[in-house]
Image 1 (tube, rainbow over the protein chains, first blue to last red):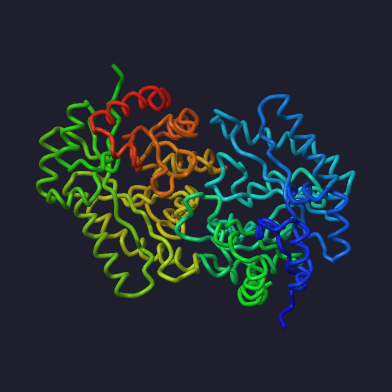
Image 2: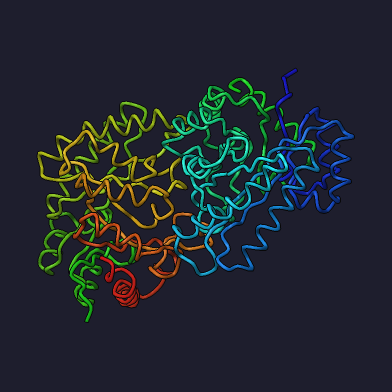
Length: 279
Length: 279
């Protein structure tokens, strides 16, 4: 029997399941942790969501996600801050320290990535005190550069660490998601740096499938189905001192269409074979 | 009348044209330079291709492309070297100094990007003396990270410059293709570095269209149709000292289906409006 003690199901992997169904699925599969998306939490109701996860004995590895901080107008910026403060409070209620931020892309019609990135830095600065006050860490997630324009203008781990640098390590962390960063020629050095700076807040695993799906968001694959070398990246993350939860987050139409329990069974097998030996 | 003296048509933009048709199209449009792909040159025959470009009074801005250097077996490596030596000789025959290299992705079934990148470096080292002997510069082209696995394990300008560093600047250069590098948070610094190191061998322009096309290779767009800020990137390239040809290379099914002369007319307009003022 493999050691599943660090394995966490991100609820995006089993998209058709409600939060209650995902919790039950984890319990049936012996998966001890869950990383819920906020839409699933909202559907269930925050208090009920917190209670059903706790009653099932699961740990919340992270909350996905706040962010979308790039609005150029005052109204949009105020709305983003309000939503992110809500997300911080939701993380508290769910008893997780780690709140993922997907920082957002260009504003509508905008082409100035330098200015948009500065707005991310500005909004982050406004959010940090509130997060610190509530004991929540804001987790900057670099996304694959193919999503830079419309989802996240943080494209590398090094850039995320630069953005986090002004703040304490327990206030702003970074995520290492294999899908987003596997290609980065600086990856080893930046994972080492993230370890030294004590900012690795999450290690997420899924594969990079080829060809890229017609909907580029859905190219994430089950570990082993794509091109990613989990042994190498996992060793780097381990050697950088990360010993926390390992979340599996997969957007993939075939996996979404499959039976949830079967998906969790495959996920456990692949985790045991490809991820755990190097974790 | 705009100054088109630095504008070059990369023949991939008008995919359905033969080389002779592309040359004629450039002449009709008053475009003074052409960047042929090798398949179009081979179709025409090398000597005939060289003659028809020269007789038309066009300049060859670059030759696309050699590369694909990542074979893991001796036979594949020998074949790659032979093909790239042919490409060097073709560049000589076509009277261009600049030979693009798209370095290749992972070998079949391979997941070790570190090892595959080392093979790129090794093959490059073997090719440089031959290229130098023939007065041709090997131009390393970073490709967008979405093509890392299957097309080019050089994903950033910084990485290309690191790989070029052991060689003289007139032996190994780098290309700045807006589509591939616009997202890079290090872009300004690396363009400045490329200028200092005198390695900018080509500036290619096209846009990054959203959503990403179902065939991800075909997401390149006409300047102005996507998210790229040509003013900012163009200024960086100009300030880095680049004053050479500016090639337009677009893989896009709609553009390939359109009338070639109409494509060139639009290309000249967009170049004059979006690129030339900052070049």
